[in-house]
Image (cartoon, rainbow, N blue to C red; front, top):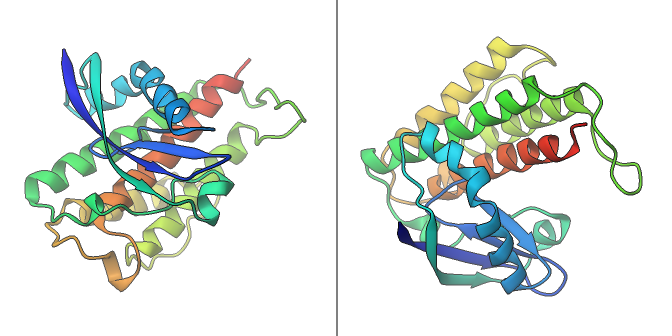
Amino acid sequence: MTGRLTVALEGTGRKVFASALEWPGWARSGKTPEAAIESLLAYAPRYEPVARAAGLTLGTSFDVDVVEHLEAGSGTEFGVPSRPTEADSRPTAAADGARLASIVEAAWAEFDRVAAGAPAELRKGPRGGGRDRDKMVGHVTESDWYYAREMGIRERQPAAGDRTAADALRAAMLAILRKPSDGSPLADRKWPVRYAARRIAWHAMDHAWEIEDRST
């Protein structure tokens, strides 16, 4: 089944991100726009379980429609798709919010599943870098707390290994994603709902795939 895949490109030069705008968490990078899109499509089978867990059908082939191309920022060069798009400012109705929340929740569940099945020590990178499993889990939890603050949530940062607090924070974030929105930035900051969903899910999936690739 072939479907239209709306994509935003972010960056120029050394790093370009291709992000599937309707599928939070599905974003990959490359040295050129073409390489970024090629990588994005190559990851479709790895992203499909997230779509399925959210009760959605991803499809098996895609007609890519690049609808925006954003300049790189400091976050882009660092390795983060950090620029909200014009499409992210569209309003969300209750059904849109439910869909976004279901995908983010599925991305978290996929990260948890991968981490639970991974060895404690992960294979190092070419220069010996990279977090091991438990530090990766802690990093994702800590980042979710920072993301929650961007959404206007003011809760104490979960202690390392406090699953109850981490789950409560996730639940509060999902509740905000589900609320109808006029597309304005949340909490008078920078992130509209659609970008918040894309950023949160991307971070979970990027590290889930890293853990998979670095597991012995």
